[in-house]
Image: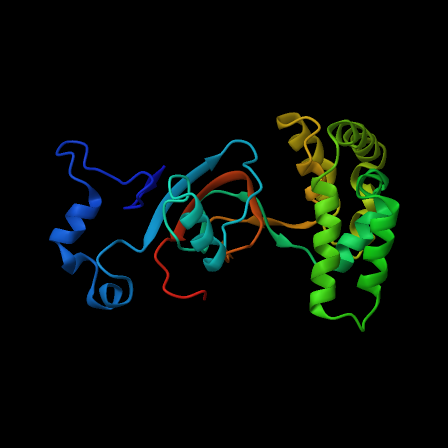
Length: 254
């Protein structure tokens, strides 16, 4: 459910059929002077409520520059030219994924989870590990290595993903709470995967998302806790109820 003035699906009063945008235009005091000065006469955010019964898609909102390009190229699909920072506040216990985990953790999982390494490929995996372990590498070199490794995974063939998924589930079943080293690893909470991987596979059998888990931070929120997603932050919502505030009229990249 969402409420707002976004052109893609604006809110209307059920009885009068009057749009929320028109209502705000006629009642500018509701916005407040500071908000009006910064964002204009339209509501600057989109309010959403999600109840995720199963994992939603892995996605990222475009940055300001890319949003402008997409809007210019395909305004029917991309209805505005702004990036969309987002804040999610848990209403119930909530699970999600947000941003790439520390690269040393990704490197660890490449060693500890054989089917993950097989999908990425030995050459790319070894190259990634070498870059991560070299303290002299620049941030740009690290980003390049991450991009190459993640791209290799996401471009895996369907048959390879199916085979690797079966191997992954077999490893989880065999190792259980000690999966990938359990709590004694550089990645506290690895045992979470022992429950999470079979559950996600039950929702989307053999999906590439089972392996994206090893790239992203898995986040658990309690009611009232929140996480912030910048433009370009890769993320996914796994389960639970949350309210979302998406800024749809930011003036700057920040």
